[in-house]
Length: 66
Image (tube, rainbow, N blue to C red; front, side, top):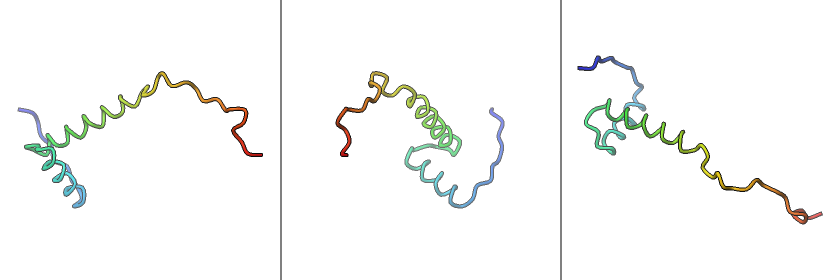
């Protein structure tokens, strides 16, 4: 069995965690927190090189109104 610990949350955070737990159909708060952590890690890694084939920006000769 995994060791356990307690954490303190303010009321607003607890309500958010309850909502996540309900929407994600998580059975426990630990499962809800793990789901959130996994989603956050996916976002960080997916942001790297999102448009690798995008050419660098170059201004046109006539891109200003003078």
